Image 1 (cartoon, one colour):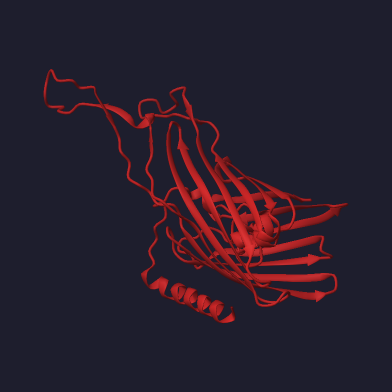
Image 2 (image 1 turned 180 degrees about the vertical axis):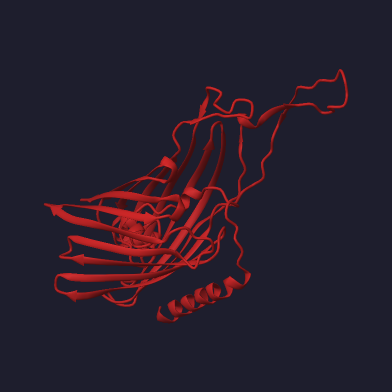
Length: 338
């Protein structure tokens, strides 16, 4: 296992090292951008660096292998007032299956709210309103292969809706996690949103047209339909290393660094830290999108509280992220396990 892991890490590092020579910005060339919004407030406060140190349901977005160690029923909910008053929600639940590992389901929702329809001739609005909404429904499974190595995968149905036009796709995410020692170095890798290309269709794309505007007396309202091109989903490869450091019997420091290779942007890195006191209180600080071309912001911060009542464990996490000229974003995550 050590030999296999070493080779995988070296191969991934070689890919990341060679990528900048051929890198080019492809921002805006893929659909399903909401799939790249980190749902967990804990990891978002750590700069989005979560492929190796995130745990359980809060970690499956970054690495499906993190679900492998969950041995209880659990649920988590995240809400965020995203940029431009867009509403973002994420809910996930785990279902342990004994010695076979653990399964989970996750639903992601992004909604713009009502937007006035404006045209060139009616810039103040036509009286109509439309909405933009995105939904992702995922099913995943993870299992510990050995006491140090685990793997997981997730299949997600993705739908984007703009008024009466929609685009649908399926994606697959896979991940692995290797612990060099129980309280030592963690190495994680994941490939997220590997899926099919798709285009939009719906009644908003139906039009009438004049086949020959220069001719008189012909039918100038022929029925037609606009055909859009096919767009890929935003595939993302993550590779991360992290380690916990026991500073005292009551205090632990977790640090992690992740490297990102996206299909629709330039490469970047994220760094995160978490200071835990008494297994109950946590303070977090991070930096995301380091070295990314034309990145906005980068600083992240947050805090969390964990507790238990009888057999029920729960946690509350808050995450804040600076997005430069776009403003800042806050996330709140509530989790429970029983």
